[in-house]
Amino acid sequence: MSHSHQAQIDAFMAQVTAQNPHEPEFIQAVQEVAETVIPFIANHPQYAEHRILERMVEPERTIIFRVPWTNDQGEVQINRGYRVEFNSAIGPYKGGLRFHPTVTLSILKFLGFEQVFKNSLTTLPLGGGKGGSDFNPKGKSDTEVMRFCQSFMTELSRHIGPNTDVPAGDIGVGGREIGYLFGQYKRLRNEFTGVLTGKGRNWGGSLIRPEATGYGAVYFAAEMLRTKGQNFDGKSVVVSGSGNVAQYAVEKCIQMGAKVLTMSDSKGYIHDANGIDATKLAWIMDLKNNKRGRIESYVQQYPGASFHAGERPWGVACDAAFPCATQNELNGDEAAKLIANGCQVVTEGANMPSTPEAIEAFQEARILFTPGKASNAGGVATSGLEMSQNSLRISWSREEVDERLLNIMKDIHAQCVTYGTDESGYVDYVRGANIAGFVKVADAMIDQGVV
Ligand code: NDP
Ligand code: 2IT
Image (cartoon, rainbow, N blue to C red; front, side, top):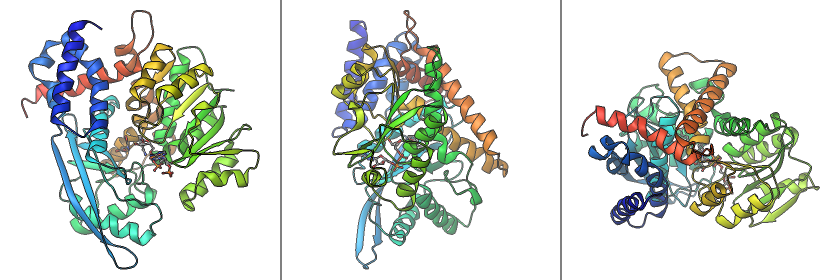
C-alpha cells in the first residue's frame, strides 16, 4: 500500500477512534473496511467528494432503552435494549437481535456496520441494522424469556415495521424468541405483517431460513474450492460453535462428503476423530435446541470422542475451518497453527471471528479466506426471501428457496472475485467483499442527496 493511502487511513481512523471511544469492536470492524475501501476511493473521487465513508460510519439512528421484567420469583429485573439503525440507502434496516450478557453498544455497532456491507452483497434491497440486549437467556425458564421478549418488544415496536426495520435472530435469539417477539408486536399493533424474519413455518416463516446461514457458508466455501478445481468430498473439517450456524454448516459439510471433526460451545470443544455423522448431528441438535444442554455431554454419548475444556478447536489438523461461534474467536497464533497443519480454506460463519492478526496470517499464507460479511450472508439473504414471500402472501418450496440461496452465494462469490483479484490472480475476499458492498450503498447515497 502507498504511503499516502496509509496516511489517509490513519487520519480517518484517528477521527473514528476519537468519536467512538470505548468501542473497540466497532473500531476493529471499521478499520478492516477502511484499509480496503480508502485506496479504492482514491481512484473514485465522487465518494470522497460526497463524504460517503464518513457518513457510513455514523448510524442513522441509535435507540437505547430500559427493559424491565419480572422473573419467576416475582422479582423485578432490568436489562438494556438497543437497536442500531445503521443505513437505509438500499432498503429497510435489516439485521438480527443478539441476547447475550456481553452485548454492548460497541458490539452492536460493529455488527450493524458489517451488516450494511453484507446486505448490499446479497443482491436484495436490504439496509443494515442490528440490535439486542445484555439479557442472558441461558438458565431462564420459557416464561421468563417470554416476559423479557414482551417487554423488549413493547419499546422496540415503536421503531420497527415491515417497511422500516425488520429484525431477526442472532446469538441467543432463535425460533422461540422470535415467536414471543412477533406475538407481542402483533398484539400491540393489531397487525399481522412480516416485521420479523426467522418466523415459524405456520405463521409466515420461510423454509430454509433456519438452515440458510450454515448452508450458505458451505456453498460459498465450495465456490472457493471450485476455483482450485477441488470440492469437499473427503476433506476434513473443523467447526467452532454448536448453535444455529454451526449445526447447519456441519449438516451441509456432511452432505457434501466431508468429515467433520469438531464442534464447540463457550465451555470447550469436542473432537471426534471418526467424524460427526448425520446421526450424531441429530443428537447434538436435540441436545442444543430442545434440551438446551452443553456440548460436553457428547463424550458420554459417544465415548470415542474427547472434550477439551476451555479450549478452541483450531489446533486440530484439517483441510477446512469454519469459525461459527462469535467475534474474535480465532487469533493470530491459532491461525498459524491451522496453516502449519495444512488448512487450505477458512470460511467465516460467525461475524468477525478472526482477529486482524489471523486474517493477515491467512492472507500472507495465500490460503482461501473469506470474511463473514460475504460467507454468512446466506442467512440475511434468506430473510430477504422471507420478506418477499410475506409481501406476496405466498410461500415457496424448500427446493425453490434453496436454489435461490445457492445462486445468491455464487453471486456474492463472483462479486468478491471481481473486486478482490490482484495481479497475481490471488483473490483477496476481504477487499472484494468490502468494495463490492460499499459501491452499491455509496451510489445509492449519492443518488439520494445529503440525508
Ligand atoms: P447461537 O446462539 O445459535 O449459537 C452460538 C454458538 O456460539 C453457541 O455454541 C455458543 O456457545 C457459542 N458462543 C457464543 N458466544 C461465545 C463466546 N463468547 N465464546 C465461545 N463460544 C460462544 O448463535 P448463531 O449460531 O445464530 O450465531 C453464531 C455466529 O454467527 C454469531 O457470530 C452470529 O452473529 C453469526 N451469524 C448468525 C446468523 C444467523 O442467521 N443466526 C447469520 C449470520 C451470522 P454457548 O451455548 O456456550 O453460549
Ligand atoms: O448477522 C446476520 O446476518 C444475522 N444475524 C441474520 C440477520 C437477518 O436479518 O436475518
